Length: 57
Image (cartoon, rainbow, N blue to C red; front, side, top):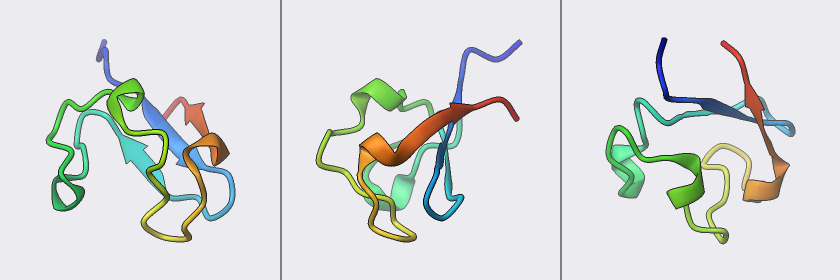
């Protein structure tokens, strides 16, 4: 079982995967959600981090 989690934007459905990270935004694979800055926004719709919820995929 993976220790990584996925977080989905409730506005547009974009999924941030801890396992994959977002290398284009400076978050290498394995970057935990709590290590993403609070001022980060969804790359798809610009929603804030508070608009994401953990999802089971």
